[in-house]
Image (tube, rainbow, N blue to C red; front, top):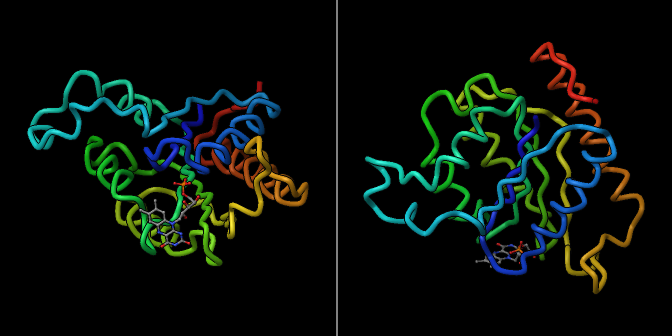
Length: 184
Ligand SMILES: Cc1cc2nc3c(=O)[nH]c(=O)nc-3n(C[C@H](O)[C@H](O)[C@H](O)COP(=O)(O)O)c2cc1C
């Protein structure tokens, strides 16, 4: 199973819209996918007591990461960086087993011209520190508000193709590293 992390909890986020395309791409590839949308994090996880004791309601999130053959993170750019909630989510996961030798793939989007290059490079540093296997093919979606139509769909077939090629490459990467078959 691949676990897809929707990297913000902002209501109505463009990240969720892009993640929906990624979900559809894995479905078309017949690859089992579990979506972790940070908008659905239980409020209790934001209590400072969670550093010491994780609430039971967080288990579906932390266990989904541990069970995954690979992680696909879709992140927006907030203040030239990773959204605070995504970093906090990472900080709440079990150490070190959550990312140790786990393949990870990054897709980013931003309102501005850099397309989340900065948060993705920051995530590569964080996941590298945690000994994850970084899939090198990244996708950046700059000026996201111009790329989506009113229904929240990407207008440019070339960008969809780029997301498809990334997902296909990532499935190959995971299958080879984990010595498993993901495609049903
Ligand atoms: C708190 C916050 C900070 C942001 N900072 C940046 C930024 O540094 N650079 C940028 O290009 N866009 C920035 N944006 C705009 C987001 O990239 C834009 O909202 C985009 O749609 C992706 O975020 P979303 O998933 O929340 O919609 C920011 C948005 C928010 C909510």
